[in-house]
Length: 215
View (tube, rainbow, N blue to C red):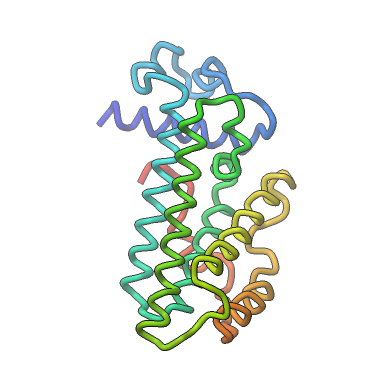
């Protein structure tokens, strides 16, 4: 338990430093000082800085895909599922600024290629999930999107990634959920032909995407 707790402290400190120091390179010396341990102690828990970043990526993956599975279990409608998945991503980004730098790739400059590959795979999984939801909409609900599901899913994901990039570029002042209701009405009308009301920011779904790695 002690080892697990220390790992969580290291990851939490890394996430906080990513949020505070946009553009500043994070060294293991600075991270060790932040945690209050020696660099040697850091390496007892993580063999490299890359593994620390992978720990945060694993947290992102587990949080997002666990919640997506719940979304799919709770609602069978394609439009509602799509809306919930997109809002989940935006709300998570808004509540976890430091991790947005990982998703946007900003924090991974100069790091090993496998970290960027892992983030790319994360978004590919989201793309595939959205594509599957839209394909099922035609089979189960008789809904036909004006464009091929793969093209539609790529468009929606590009919008989400763009909002995350704006959040990072604005030094976390331009919120990912800002004006999302109006944007979603346009997107849903264009892709599904049915405008869908957007949930208010920081609903229960958003609250479940807290940046704390202590749970």
